[in-house]
Length: 442
Image 1 (spheres, one colour):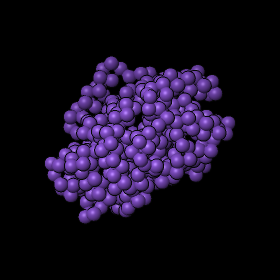
Image 2 (cartoon, one colour; image 1 turned 90 degrees about the vertical axis):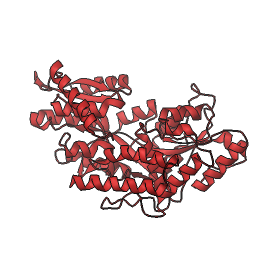
Image 3 (cartoon, rainbow, N blue to C red; image 1 turned 180 degrees about the horizontal axis):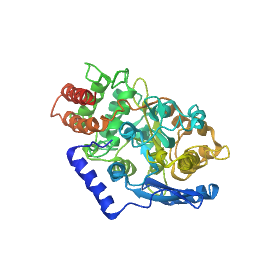
Image 4 (spheres, rainbow, N blue to C red; image 1 turned 90 degrees about the horizontal axis):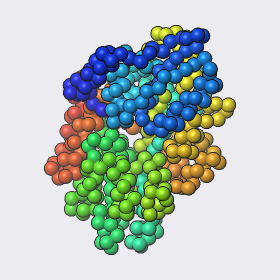
């Protein structure tokens, strides 16, 4: 999702040069009848990854894995540097918002032609997952996890304000927030992670757009429809500007907040409503972390359609692997299948992430899994999670230039929220930028 500006390319090139000067890790190659793979991930649950790698190598004793990880904040640029410098990289974590950039550059490969055994899995995925794994009709990986943005609310705050159900529309959200503010329960009842540096900010904005009637950003030909008068996007931007400005029900910290800051505001009881990836609800309702635990519930996204954004992170194979031959390709597929597919008929690794970390999943059948229902049931209404997931849609506009447009749009949206320009001007500027990028890409 990060834009490749000249400054960012300079950073990537310096990272690539440093890899060449220091020297890359050993290349993946066949050794004593085996294959060594280089795995790269972002730094999350590293101990679980290492333990899973140990189990994988026991199952496939002919394969060994060199493992490197980078922070999420630097992961995109670190990976681009590895690709540019041809640092040995075989299997890696990727994300739906980088798929088109990396696939168009030839840095990762489609897997469905070489490994048609991936196709039976597709019918088991939520529709947004299939779409998010696809570029030009080809499948590019197996899911690490999948999630949706959800609308959460503090049940205690609602009860104290006299409400028995969460808001179903933006108008109802405004009325409930005004009542909560008037009763002194929370000065700013709504908090959102809309900091310009947070990649989630455009996704939670998109989730609100999707939830409205005719909630589209682009048409099938990737023309921006959000600038049309009365569009769902205009409705959301106007609502946000009013909530922040005249009504003062949206916390001003929202424009600097990342997801973690939003969580802290909700945990402290300073806010009532938020939009978060569903796995964050496990943190909100963790009794070891806050006195507000157990008070947060899911309401469907406020709007006429109640839709939301679904997103995925996935395991991919780099384009370096086919050049190494059949053994390396088979080892790489075995990795993707073990980590993102079934082992002995069960999504073993996916379930582990769900049970131990509360991560969402791509496979709809897991909503009925008794272990997951028991674990997730401690912090969420599993049926409501499933209902929102069924209404989820993949992000629109996933092109190699989406990242550049995203970063531009975050700044433009802030101008509208702060009343520095009208919502229609912001949306017109966003559309103009999109059309410029689209024309350059042709």
